[in-house]
Length: 378
Picture 1: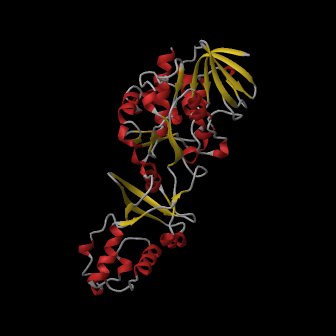
Picture 2 (picture 1 turned 90 degrees about the vertical axis):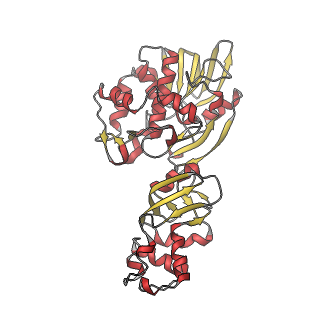
Picture 3 (picture 1 turned 45 degrees about the vertical axis):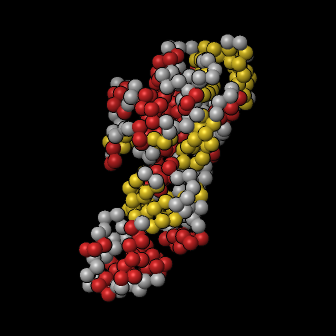
């Protein structure tokens, strides 16, 4: 049996940051992969979108008060200062996104440098966790670990190719925690038969505005073989459960201003040509001069401002950036990340029912929750 004071399950963003923030504590990090930070390394096209200069609780799906109490203690400015003190100066790009300048390996290497290599146990898969008196026993494929405190930083179900499993949820369930049903998040939508014509437009991108209940999202929509994806669709997937969404395919167009135009309608809607022609066929409208369209035809065109339909589903975990849902945050103390049900059992990062939009928000959540946990463990 291997003994330690603190056992961290998972060497992803939250687990690495937690270890980096308390280098002098007696802890071990166990990871089922052969190396640390596998998901970090492939994120953001290999550049890792670390955080965002515009950080607010409403960038997240989850309990807003819980999220606010945590990110205010280690926000984007504190994170950037902490990284800068260790030689990493992320590059600010569009939409307020901070990326590694060369590759995601920069931040993985930085975090690993802060942790003694002897504190890692790779190729170690957790089977279950039990509590015996004041100690936890963690049963793994490489023996049993005993610790006074256990931190679950195992992530969600997305990126199954990297070996993602449900172990974090399984541990929480075994100790009586409620799990908000996990679902694929930041993922594309599949289509109903009526929208199958979208598939013929695969590879084409256009700017849209999407409404899901009270949430409004602007960005790109990319037509794909399986359905629709793109930045706006991925963010929209966080807030969609079932039912209809509304897409404005003409977000910058004032239809009244083009009704008297002598140009063909296909040339003035502002959509990619193939997209315009596909919609005209679907709406049963001849491509002719705008001033020749009938009132009924204009009513059909106006539907593109509020194109309403219900996705059939999502592309699933294999294509999802994150997992939404997870451990109920009502059962976790925001001042320490400790379970309200079991003393000395902690949860950080994606395993919790907190999911950020695209733009570095999920890595920021991993780092912020790890910081709060580190303070409780010091």
